[in-house]
Image (cartoon, rainbow, N blue to C red):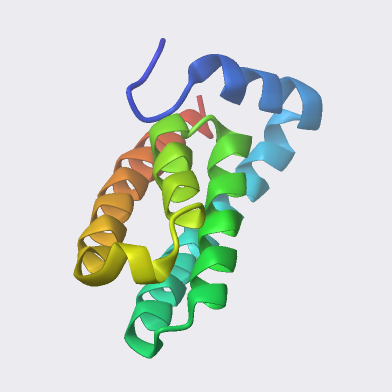
Amino acid sequence: MPSAAIDAQVFAELQETTGADFVVELVDSFLEDAPQGLAGLRAAIATGDADAFRRQAHSLKSNGVTFGATAFADAARALEHTPLAELGDGAAARVAELATLFDAAAAELRRLRHA
């Protein structure tokens, strides 16, 4: 069943490739690591560290792609490819949007990992 937050086909392919048990471990790791990545984005904004911001966004994008969290990955990709200085005062709002997309993806992943 398709989800707005997770591409079910991508997730099914991941399960088939890695095995259902390992997917549970991967999902748990993502659910633990992504909030730290979001915090890293916020810290990079606070310190003006454009390099750290880009690296965190890249990591979040890559993980989102792995699980089929398309909207999340696309939003992280946009942050990765937009210089922090260009985001300016809007950077925090963009990270908040990314966090909302993560919350939706996380809820769906929690459901799918045991399906």
